[in-house]
Length: 299
Length: 295
Image (tube, rainbow over all chains, first blue to last red; front, side, top):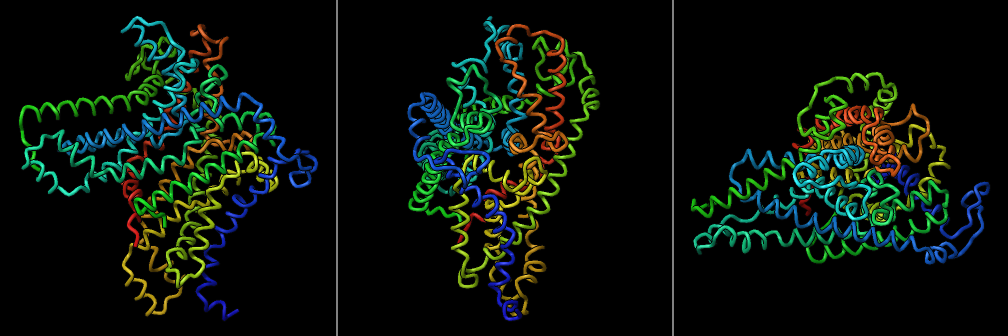
């Protein structure tokens, strides 16, 4: 015992003990539940006791037209989010970087990254109010353009754009921070050299600023591919409804509704498993790419 | 940086300032609008004419929130949840960060454990295996399901140990010469130095815990254990204003009065985040770049 106490390795393990216990309880234990994807679940027998069913769930899934709809919606929404959250923050950062008035710059930043810290529950409450048929947006559209009220959240035309734009609204300020940090670290002699060569401000942006942050852009674009199968459950779950299932129902909401609420546990697990495995492969792929090309390391 | 003050350059600045002002206003508008609605006369609010200033000033919605017992029960659950998650979560993170801040030759299992935590931690069994697991652990309808799964946060551990690894190596050497063991170092050497990084993760924890709503939707039935965001989700979101049968009615009394009441509840739920926002702002940029330099 005293020999152990004198060994640092022993103390390090004691320090890690809480993490290991929590990790086993909430990360490792659920993994055996994944076998549900290949079973016939009988509640009285539990997950382990239920008989195996092979690939039955997957055969059933392939014949289910809903799954293709859900997959399409997920990809369209997440790619839309990915693109908007790549381009808009870069433009914002380039604009902020041009300004010399400190307080204005800081105020804009303070305001634009505020929504990042508000939950989608709060924001869904707000957006449901302003986008409703008797909300402020419809009221403005009516008084300015004489348009008839549109049920934005109950329209298959408007739902995806609203999801993508409201996500952009929430996250653009936050994403700007990293690009702005990259921009401020560009060596100012480069700008001075460009100035002497007679470059205009737009030319300086084009030939100094953008190349200066190209690496960061490439890195963040690569890492954002991780989330391609996750269209944003919290946002969509709090904003969608039956009318917009055609364009707004995504993998996670579908799994939640059918698998958990509808108690089709095997089906839900089967879809969740595919999602998790592809997600894990994407994480491995993007981090490998990021490490190879940008020497990005987590630890 | 040298900036020429030509006409073109000024025009360029003006365009940028106008665009950024528009972006800022667009960001603030929905939030201010909700606050304005919450202070307005319910009948005027339902006409949709309120912009960012209340019309027909009224405290009515807030006095009705005061009568809502569930609102305060849920508020208390959220507060308890935050305090417990903060204390235990920070302790777990702080303890685990120490071994991981060691060199591999000092803590031999370091890299193996880190890779296990990273890779296995990236694999999410999905919502249903997690549901089954919590049921098996007897955590269904139990306060601890709102806390325990959130105590281990790999990102926070990373943040803390990368912060330590950026401190001068000589500190550790000095402590070794003075004969300090791991626990002495952990408490007397690293704790005072870690206050900025601990503040950062604490603020993240507070905001994330406050905002989390979904765990209780899945695992909690007992209204006495419902956190505030979940309660808000149930009253504001589950009641669906876009259901076909409700379209066009637009003005029934209950719906009208609920609009200002919901706005008041939303505004009150935003308040704590707005309150700690200045602190968050101070620490989080720091937090993003914290420990980003690795040797």
